[in-house]
Amino acid sequence: MALTTISYGSLASSETLNNNFNYLDDRISGLSDSIVSNAATTNSNIASINASVSSISDNLTPLASAFTSGGLYITRYVNDTSWYTAYFSDSAKTNRIWLEQGFMTPSKSWSANESVAYNFLQPFKNTNYTVLATSTNMALSGNVSIGNVAIENLSTTQVWIGNDGAGTFAVRVFACGQ
Image 1: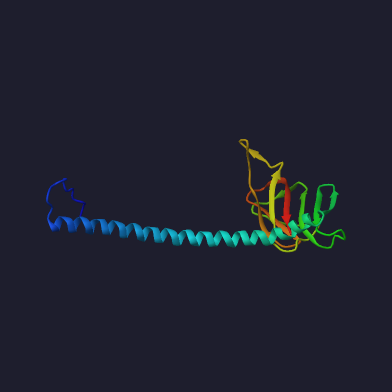
Image 2 (image 1 turned 45 degrees about the vertical axis):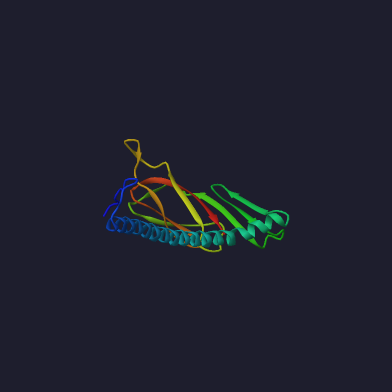
């Protein structure tokens, strides 16, 4: 059913008027249902965002308190191709709130789909940390690297690095978290 145009000054039957009112009522009801559905989706999205913000806030609270209480206390260590920087909220350095560390593996001949465990210099508090890894000196075929490296498993003390192609290369690793 469509809206019927009634010319100005003309008489319209009650059926035409009722059909127009019913058409408009159906359109308004459809829009109302759509608005209610969109509002529910928006409320759900807001709840998810609030939960994420709360989680981020929980993780940043120790860092923020370190800044308000006089600053961070830092320990740095470098040993050839391995290093770490630990951030503490207290001068006694007993409350570590952030850790960054990295290393470069020796160049080695990798088998296809091999996975190797490497130890961190400092353990993380949990496995909720981020790791980035990239290969160096990887063989090229047509100016494209052969194989990819990937982080395959995490523990608080080790990271397992895998690859999908055989070749000789080293891996650079950067990890950060608590």
